[in-house]
Image (cartoon, rainbow, N blue to C red; front, side, top):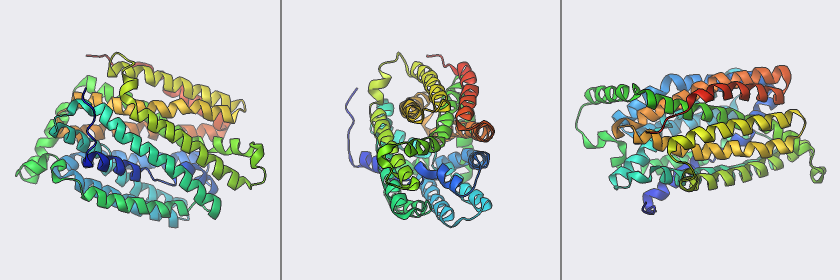
Length: 411
């Protein structure tokens, strides 16, 4: 396979992901909600509401992106994100948290799948479509590096201000920059609308027809379910480890001179920084890691099993009181997601018409949101009832069993 061409658009794709992942609030989101007086179940319901809202809008948003232009869809997405962050900054009640989550869901709905489709369109136009997994892994590495930097920035902000709310306000800045970056993308990446004079109604009908044809394929649907089931699990547990890290921070002897809040800020910042550095490395080396498996489908199957087993082990270790070891064991859950996702997107793209790729990827993401809708409140309920450790054990075990049925056959 030819080496990647790192032209201007390659770096635009990369810096889009870097800026998009400067979400300073992410390492502290669960702690922010706990600090606001919410229970684990209330937090799980908030997560579920966000995913349900996105669930209703995601397929139409994907079709609109394919029919009216992907750049407009992305700009709409980032505008909604910015208003969401401002709402979180000012919110003082559970009701307003729902409003902020709704705006966040709008942002996700208009973004998910759309940017990936732009990347794949670009590669196809340049005659490098076979580089999908490797190229997407490289751009995802930029994103994970952004998350690593974000962890340090957010930790510093919490350390010096003692207030979680400012991290939402500061996050607005990189998102405004990303708006201008997206506007600079070439018009040809808007999709078929950049190459046709077909009116909107006719174009929308054509895209919708192609989309429903694509999702009738049972194998394609099973592939999307496989990707979504593990990604949904990852999306839930990656935030719920924040209280585990906070507990670990309180037991670190050389931080005793700091307040509990500052101990937590320093530890979370450092832990997430190294986690995201490693996930950035794993994303960038997707090609090498996938070469260890016979096919992309084989990689998806084996990595999902490994991810759930390590997640179960990390949960059990935390239940028995070893918070530091639990954080260490959770690392493979992060690494697997960031290798598995580029491979999965490539497998989907190999069996999907380019004209409806954004729509199909949106369906995959929608299935992921449904997984979160189920898993987040379940984890919250069991965590409130039995403690976070046992809650994570039960939730992981319940998700491991159906995963066995999602094994994908290679061509």
